[in-house]
Length: 151
Image (cartoon, rainbow, N blue to C red; front, side):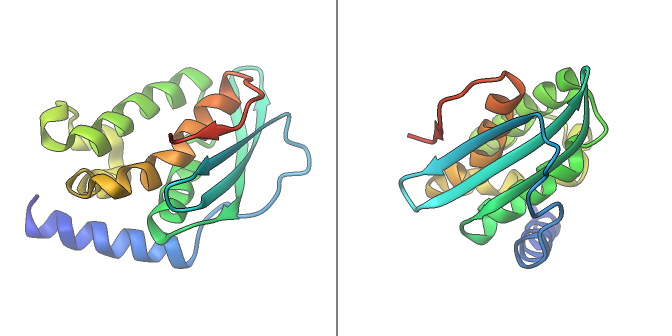
């Protein structure tokens, strides 16, 4: 990873970890999902308001490390006002990016600011922290009732 990308990664993760966007409950959500990372204890509850296929609003609550919070914060900002299909396609690209890094074939431009998460792949123990919110979103969008676990 380039020094520029490492600096961006650190800056963005710290900012979103300290000041998460879209944090809090969403009373009129029509989809929810719970996620848990038993390895480190990260927990998330995701609230999604779907209008047809459009994600009108999305928020989250929970506790976790800076990477987990930052990923959830960045994710909610990225998928709001996008379709379910667009969000699921973004899930696939981000998941590949954080698990495979540069060998994923994902163009960083295709994920925008989420490219800052690309540095996670270098720290295998943190991949689950970064992907928890994304797996929880996928579960909510697919209407699954069981709790999401990174194990």
